[in-house]
Image (cartoon, rainbow, N blue to C red; front, side, top):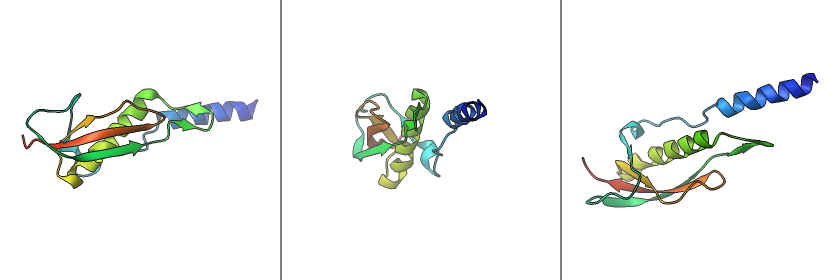
Length: 103
């Protein structure tokens, strides 16, 4: 009984954790719902995180937030200041377009 309780508590705590943190320079990157007009495409990136921890599924919102953060982290390295999703989240993976809008 104690083992089940401990496992349940551990699973709950892990689902509340954020494993991805914002990199320097990524805080200024804006997230767009669709591809912008009058911006230069700087590239594409595929990002992924764990969407399950053993038999436990992580929060869909948390996975989505971490994927967005990873994409934002990649943008400054390619000279981008905006990102937009190219695909929906699928098994903890997502593709993003990186844009330079200069505004």
